[in-house]
Amino acid sequence: MTAYKAVFSDIDGTLLNSKHVISPDTLQAVRRIIRAGIPFIPVSARPPYAITAYTDQLDSQQAIICYSGALILDKNLTALYSVTLSGTDLQRLDKLLGEFNHLSVNHYSGTHWFSNDLNNPWCLQESEITKLKAAAKPADLIDVHKILVMGPAQDIRKLEILLKQNLPHLSIHRSKNEYLEIMNKAATKAKAIDFILHSLNISADEIIAFGDNFNDADMLQYAGHSVAMGNAPEEIKNMATEITATNDEDGIAQVLNRIFV
Image 1 (tube, helix red, strand yellow):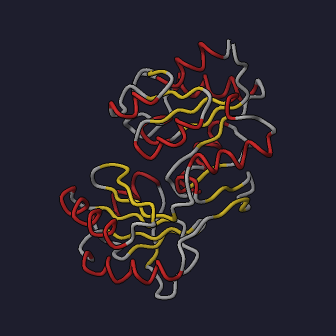
Image 2 (cartoon, rainbow, N blue to C red):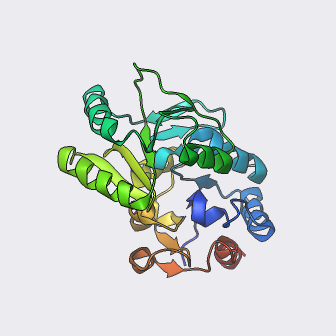
Image 3 (cartoon, one colour):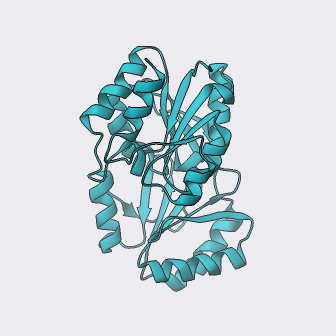
């Protein structure tokens, strides 16, 4: 049996329950393997400061993977790896997104979050979930790691089709029906994990990855042992090594407590 040497986990819908907190049993299980010397590294679409509250809670000293693989920061929030959208693509996106200004259009650059409308209900909701506050987007913004557009599902679907037709070379996908994420296609969770594994001198066969949605697919396919949450779509469950309980049933804890005895 493989002796797994590191664990990588999505955050929303995976590490966190539906109340956006780490349950006591999952917290205990993760802390236990960290104390045993097993790195537990979050791999999330979230910005850095929406991740560090949880790594502080876990008492983790490892790097964090932000923006679905576009940015890796060490424990001091120093950038180790960065993949941004090109200036040309940002200009084209600004024009296309201008027709959807009624939606919440959010640009993430490093630790900064900028929004087109600070009073948009979707922006306010995201602020409540992440405990962060957006700033108004400057006109000359560069070094953008991710654009997140939030709004009604039918509008998001219409925008997704338009952007994929005009910018097929970019990574454009819904992390849920109301959230559309736009990034450089070179930014993936699997590539970011691979970068970290080289520094840890660990192979992909020696890691476990947890995920619950389509933006976790490449990570689950990359890991030696992949675990889909019980709340994941069937397509994600079908590509995983195993399926655990839901994020409200301590699915992560169940696997960690079985594998790391």
